[in-house]
Image (tube, rainbow, N blue to C red):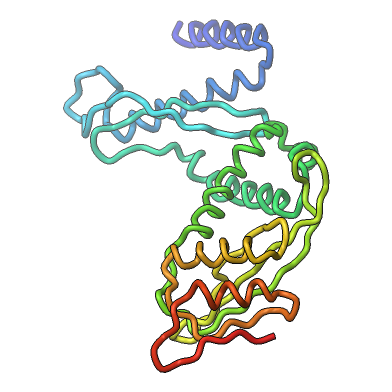
Length: 256
């Protein structure tokens, strides 16, 4: 009789899945939820709300966890335990592959691949759940990394700095323009080479160079002994000498 009831239950469940807009996705949602229920109950020692002498801890609601799959993105309601915590095994095992996918998406974005092309690339790899909007969300992490790089504190004394400009074509205000990208590298007191800043500028004028070096000063650099720049960057040389304080007993000079 119990077997008959189980058959009727699963038959009704399958009919419900077939009626859904995406039957496979609905099945996957149901399956992940059941696996989490069984896994968390096993760790707690008893089902939620049931008295048992074997209970090890109690349930404490759920937390939402985004889960990207080839069938699409779902939001798991992961059970929370008061002690010990619980992480679904299928989320843990997919963590490394998901991180690898994120890195591929970010590298493609850095190399200038559009979000639409990344979406098509993901589909060609069998990953249907990544849209152009999700690609943009994944790349927001890059914005935080760039923001930290541009604002991180610097050492007070940087004996030697090099300033040079690259010219790159970028999309700005709906059109492609050529813009100067000033790269400033430095050698610290312990001999370590460090890229201090990479800043896009409309040109290599004295005003933009002074603004750039003032930014380095605000981030902590006070003493610069020697500034090396391109022969065409007279504004850079003058402004670096004018912004940074000269260390006693040394000469501040710029060379081409």
